[in-house]
Length: 466
Ligand SMILES: [Zn+2]
Image (cartoon, rainbow, N blue to C red; front, side, top):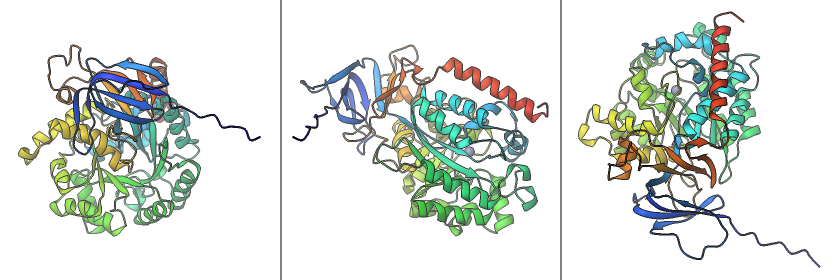
């Protein structure tokens, strides 16, 4: 007699009595509604209380005074910079990079692990459920830096896209980084290919993607740009880099390649719907049209752009042209707060300082950038980015009845325009990663101490004190 397979019933979490911004295609919102999570997916979302008679409910959450939104998606970061915050405080991008490259060139696996835990914990407690990191400094003999990041992501419980970066254009080849901070073209490509083979999981609900991510036109050879694009397309993974961040970069591209950054990207195979680029501040109408035509995505980093005086990205123009746009913290050496929920506000405020103010972002557009927009930029809009039945239960419950928000009637306006809202509960695939404002997977105080010690050690090593 064949053994009977037991029927497994999904475990349900029911959240009720909260406002809900689903960020679906119609921007559906409920003033008072419910979300039912079954295992790792959203089973239902709607107005009023949850359906009666649900079986196997393992948890009920009273969301009174809260707003539920999709989890935030961070599309650009450099975790290692957690150890070099507060330096080169008054520099523009190129001077800042020249000051920091020699320090970053001394990082090792333990430091990257400490920095990654801190970067991730900071974002997770502020409602991030999916994070991308762009790591491009791989000093010889520094250990398994990508592995350290992946370990940290696993511990915090966040979905992770590790963009394996690289630099092969040192100073002697006309690049900006010192020669000792770069890899050879072959080393960079081989290590990136190994990372894809070892770690990339393309399945529905994946916790780990790898992307191919040479650093920027001024630190990467044309050969590496071309070969990296070919590698990513062979392997079916996404492509990421920095683009059009500053006027200095534009000048650099014209001097070295005889074109602006966007034309250079197009000539090396770097425009396409499998590509997303950080910044894209200095974009002409033709550049925006090229991104729209090819489906190339943008990681908008308003605080970092302001910190380095880079300029104001034309986000309203990018959106009206149909370009996918998400938000990024960027590295915390140029955005010391390291939080993404405050970038919703900054994206909105900065857009109102730019040209074409009449088209500036609304609070709902800002929320969309930080959720669905980010999911689209990372190629995951079928899985995350909105609260809809069948999608992954990546969800945040923001507390809006406290001092910071209780007198703002519109919950989305409270979240975007108000103080940084406390997170009462955050789920990734139905599993809690934040409970009552504290990260579940890691002890924040221990993470803070670890980051402080690693930062001090890096400063000593970089100063030549061993
Ligand atoms: Zn960056």
